[in-house]
Image 1: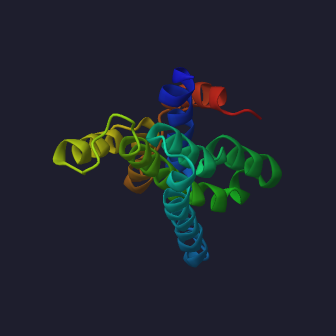
Image 2 (image 1 turned 135 degrees about the vertical axis):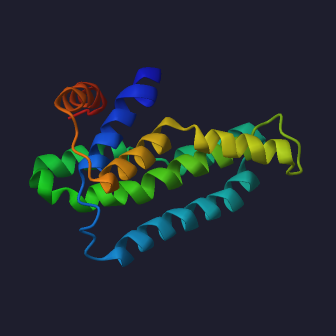
Length: 173
């Protein structure tokens, strides 16, 4: 729903990134591998699916639905339940890799495969993709959360409790 996408999940992502131990990346190659395999899978889907589904809109929806997961909804809360706040660090850091890829590629794919789009890429199409990426609430929350984390500022109590309230609405667990 719109409330989950525009409010609850962004609050949860901001809170996770702002309070995470981003510096505790033991093996950055794991995150590079994870992001790379996702991009490779998306590239393969963008080659194969349009050959199966000739309708551009359907092909875009199938590509998007094939790679998109519920990582942000399930993986981080589940890792927190299983390993505690400290043990969920790798899942949170992987969120910083997975979330931008999923959301940027969603905007790109759904724009490129829109049924009304011209066959050629033009500046208006590229501009629409860029605006969609920059204004995506999940990406904005992730960037702001990382910036907050790096700033070293502590979260005011009223802001923390407000974030807790809205972030709690995003978690299915």
